[in-house]
Length: 333
Image 1 (cartoon, one colour):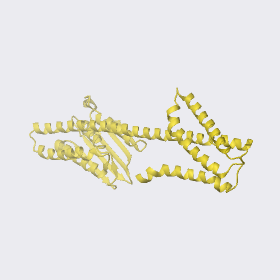
Image 2 (cartoon, rainbow, N blue to C red):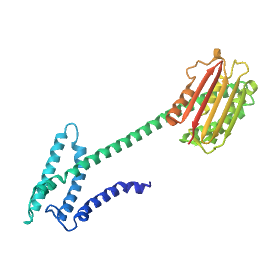
Image 3 (cartoon, rainbow, N blue to C red):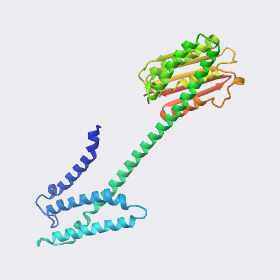
């Protein structure tokens, strides 16, 4: 619905309801009277009732119906009903032909009651809608804040590991330092610009996975057997940026070192808007890193998955016989 339609939708509904209400006496009674009451009586009094509807809904209810002032609210409504009743009687008695009966007396007195009840219901519904809207906005702001915090955690942690790699290559005076820095610059560009978006095409995420793996292969060479298999049949599907890299980062952190025949296997398949991602690596339990930052990446990505993809993902983590594997199934947008 456009902003113009949204702006005038509610007032338009009110207008139509009141037009129908004001037209009912004409449609039913025509030029006839009802219990000695003229058609004009219903038309004029209903206009007054409509005014009282908005007086109660927009002013009296929100200002007087509180813990301390509700007695004043009840008294005010009673006074309005009484004033309305006697004002109608006064105007009707200006016509010498008018005769007050039990039946038309009830109509004169109770006609305002449905409008007051309707205004209270309208106020209650409006308050509920407003509360739900504010609650939704608050949750959205909280979600955005949490995600921003989690993303800020990813970047320093990721950069710390990459800088450590560069220092290692520099100390070795390796010829691989220059291509590694080029790869790193591409990853930094991705982190600074693309990862600032709420979502990115899955093709960009897979491209950076390849960059990251290539960067690590430049560092470790043939010391670690790395298999990377990517099959992306939905390149335009959207995903939270920097969501998959931490899994691979974790594999390289714990899957290299004093390990016999270390290997890391990465499989990614995107088909029918569903991502299947699996990372498997060997590790040496005796040399498993115990630093306080270990696991930041995985904990971070778990939190982000729960915030963004609740009920739309399945994450299985297995650790057996010094083989660690992560399997993520995720429904993409």
